[in-house]
Image (cartoon, rainbow, N blue to C red; front, side):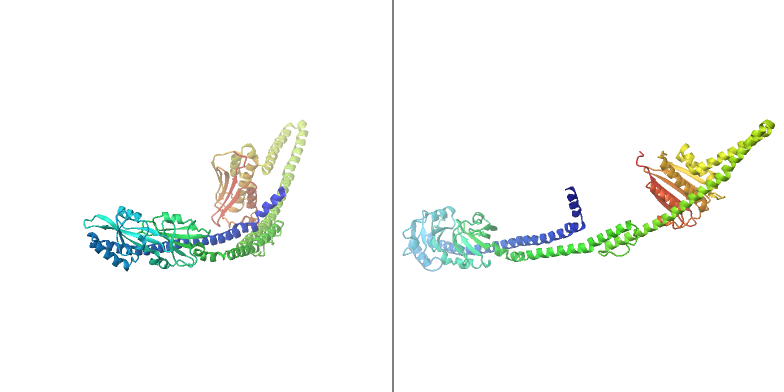
Length: 592
């Protein structure tokens, strides 16, 4: 189970899956998101546009209805302002009513009513709306209380009629009654008026009263007989200002409903404009039909992106990884040929190829260095063996002979025996010094006895180093330290000592310098060793793998010792201006 989980996690981290997760999938989501956002934004914009348009049309239609009613109210007010009604001359008033009622806006007849709605005067014969019915007391009460025109329903049926009334005053300015006349909605031809509003193929314009009953509507076979159950009706009837809303019709269809009140009426007439929502967003719906095409396009782009990613990225990287493994096994030509893919992968291949060539060059240099070190070790062994044989062994043989001769002379010639012993003592001193010299070659005794810094001081001042270098004119070495001196592990101090020793040997053997400087800096996190001279200098190599190729085996040894302790070697040299060798060694991890 654990292996399966690891395998799954490995596959999820694979380049193909990552391409899908970070390239193809986001691209697809962005395309789909843009498509749906565009549809939604277009839908909202269309809704706002249609609501604003229908609201403006509702206000216009309400204004037209209001103008029709205002014309009749104005005509009735002009009649009430005649002097005949001020002087209460019934004969003249009846004659005037008959003339106005026969023609014009009030063909249904005009009546003069008192404050209770009772008839004071009518034309002959009496108008039909007064025959056999109750007096219009509600209209009279409304007009007398408001001292302004009023409009109230008179009857229903196929020809809805409203009764309009205006106050009548006597010559003193006191209201003593009202003039009332019927207005037939059929005579107003409201259907044609409402039909002038262009609201789309299935849009309907309604005129409703305060209870929501339909008084008229624009000519259409889709007009409703009732608006009961319409969710936007209550909003339209209660709102005193024009507006628009998105609502649901009684049959469940979504509708936009714009509305505007008719100002003149006190009974809540409203002009409503209803338009099906699917017609409003018809362009959006047609656009949304392309959504499968957009999704298919996104899928095609995703597949092409995945194919391109696999062909131009995943496979070349896999090939490059396999070739890198071959480099690890010594095939340094494995990365020399192109692997294809994007340019960045080819740049990576060229970088790996350069690294392989450098590794190959470094290995070749290491072979030369190891050969030189081996040869040097053999030469050193030969020198030590020769010195031990020629100097130390011969000295010991001579000492034995001198001791034997002194032993023989002890009885016969004590003075000669004493002289022989003095010679033995001198030869022993020379032999001891030779043995000590061998010991110093093998192990710096001052490092163990005196410590790191004193050992380096002795190294800088010792004439033995100069003699071993084989150079007669050896420059003086100026030795300085800085920072807080601390003791370090023995192997670390020995490596640092050998680095300074080898750098000074290079100065003595090759630099032809007049002066040399050796500096040891104890910094916070590292030990810095610097050896500088004012000698002839040389062309410093750019890469460490060329040290052995140019025969700088001493510097190569310094580089290897520095790398062994996690350090770095820096060589600064200009022909004719001297050389500086700087080695930075981080303190061991256990050092506090």
